[in-house]
Image (cartoon, rainbow, N blue to C red; front, side, top):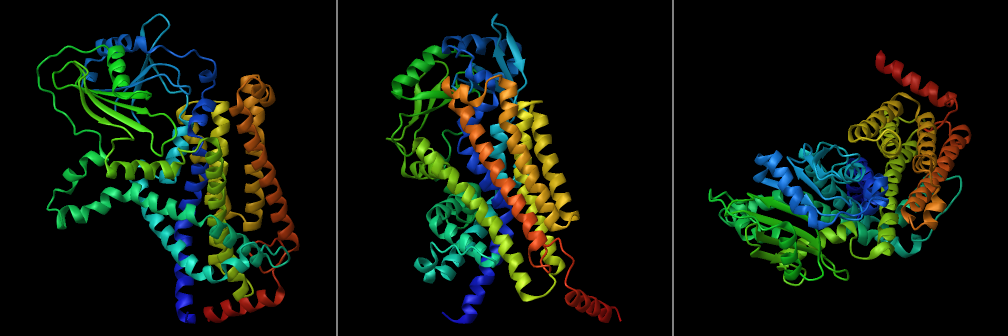
Length: 527
């Protein structure tokens, strides 16, 4: 391949990676944690480990009490069925983000409860929006994933010829750029299939509707959405008929749903126009394990339980199987704990890939000149602030969950620590900021097992002996991260004191010759 073509691919790989890297670091780091989404839901709410599971026989009692107090809720509300993470029956009413939640007290009275935590949901939101507002953050991250795909393609073109020769080469020594390059290339190539799947699935899931827009109007004359309606939605919105109708009790409705889809464990029912002749309920559940996509969904009448639509892994349309299968592949929901740990490791490796890519760009600037330009210092500050700031923010979020609690406190903890870290990294010398932020991350992670122990009154090992392996797993991951960040902090300080004085990572005085040359050039420009 011509040298000019290689330079073009290198420029494409570099700039697409740099533009996408910040958002993808946050998405990958948070996404690696959300692989254990169900476990996080149990961990964030200690009562879920000890509270008895509600009986679904009380479901109709809860619905009746809710409708008596809030008749406007007849239009639409959601009934959450008991799960291991949330053992209580609950009704959610209102728009997402402003929903109100109701339960039955032990005496059978309707009570409104404020969510004690939304830690798992906030981490999931960080994964698909990188912390941007939900209204448009997902679309931005979808565009970022397109850039991510360009970085992958250009990287393969650049490094595939030396694939076997450099695959396991990790040359540790004084040449830090070569060491980072070896680690970056090895991780990128070994996890390439995962990254291809992730880039493709992310772009489709985030931008799918927008990508269909040209075909909707230019090819299918406005009929495309009607053709794919059954693949992207369970049912079309219904309108109330105005004719009252009886309501089938929830236990009888559930029994009918279980007969229609044997072996399915239902966890969510969404009612529309209950008490109206046109009323219907959408039921969602999980089919038995052993299939790529386990989602089972049923639309039924609220008055007599008549099944209007049944979607199971066996009878789903090709489009539905493709979409649900893509979601399953993206989140790793099909292989048990072995696959979850694989996805966790690959997710963390992906975060390292984007972090190391930025470090390589900064190192390449050092190679070309004596003192590094302001652009290299700015990139170092942004890399430290955005990447380590998100790690510190997540650590603070986890600690607040175990101390103060409350949804607002958790959000304030993440965004507050993240914002302070970004500002800190921009105003401090990069080497100082890196050392201080890495120690911050290490201390936050190290405090988590002890805070968890203090709040629960049970140490992680005793919890494991009692069958609560989630507590031991969380403590083990936090301790491993604390040790890793502490080691990185010491390495940054050592490099700052002993490394190249011309680097942005140096804590030494810059070389006199280079400083004089820079001062002379600045003086000439001023004249």
